[in-house]
Length: 354
Image 1 (cartoon, rainbow, N blue to C red):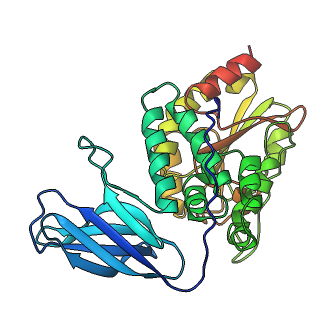
Image 2 (spheres, one colour; image 1 turned 120 degrees about the horizontal axis):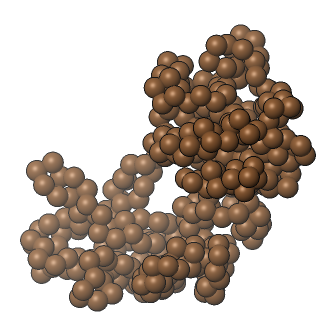
């Protein structure tokens, strides 16, 4: 994050005692009397309808008891097929919750009136304010989210934001955020922490990790298109090579395919001067992998276990999304740059191989 926007929210202490009452009130503009409004939660990526109530005079009220706060949605159903339409996301917790708009000009509804919902509403207001400056908005909002995660590490606001945005942050930031959470949440996010700890090992300045995964029978085999073993070490130690770009990609990955013209431009211009690309594919279909190499004329080196995300290289380099790349300086065996996008590859090679 390039710029710092200070906005820390006080953590909310949420009790998990006996059932307590909640009331959710709201309005729907121009709603037909009798139209149903639903309270629903998301389970296994599907809506679980908890309760419903009919609209009367554009208003509705939902009541119930809640043992512990949880994330939920106000939903209506539209059309002949009764497809769900989200009205607002809210936190069901003890107290009086009101679902409304910030102003008459707003399209989106928000919830307010209880601790967690007030924090979420204030966060949304700050985000809207930051979006007015297009040049700084992305960095400022990212910082805003991170500070909110840390300040609310003990409640649903922090946990939800973390799950939605952790992959935008530096490995140490992720580790620090998890460390601020209760023990049960630290356990839940254990795999994310481990991946972040591994990511620290492949930041620029660290030595590269060899890619050697080769096995027999059912074991994954990282082989070239013609079935030969090609370790990363052998490429880096090749005297013809000065810099090797480890490129994680797949034929099914749209963003990866959009990087191809830039990789080809850099490769065509600098390969003879010592630039090599070691492509590691996350394809799961061998034919699709080979077809992409042939049709796109990807004339550099390629290996794959043809095992989708399940391969050792992915874990060693803490790759959680593709495209991803790591530039290795052969003389030192150290990673000197990561996540080069678009023309950045060509510009970096021009800088190194003038």
